[in-house]
Image (tube, rainbow, N blue to C red; front, side, top):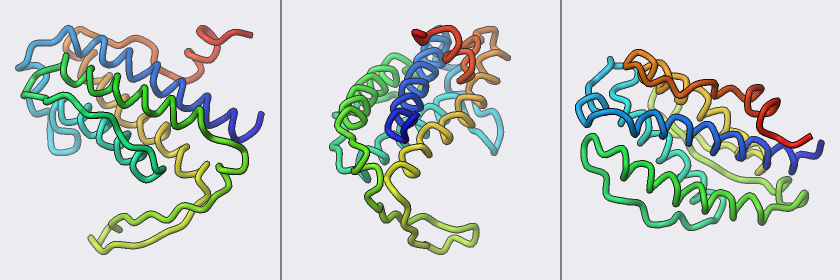
Length: 169
């Protein structure tokens, strides 16, 4: 499997798993969406908005213009879903435009280190793109834990479940 195929598969799984989490979140009340769950993860809405913002950031750093997002009021799972749908569509376009050559192009990013100082680092585009999927895994797990505790599990969202049960042979 080429790097291009791996990136495409990671993005397909990412969208599929996000949709399952959003489906479950759509069954919650506004209060359930916004209740704080602790300093490490905040509310379910906080987690979903963090995931969404990381997707928007990825579109921006890869040169794609993100779609206009819906205005999200506290507890508004439907507006969050609309924003995810728009961003997923742009991400599909961006991934569809990639080539083996473009995946090797260097990307320069900046992020804060543990001391709050900004550092600059350079990685090939394929590594930066893979971080979208791996970043989402952690936060979908946090969201799934909250959803399950509220009686609305998103079900299996693991890559292997998606790969073995939803992809054509």
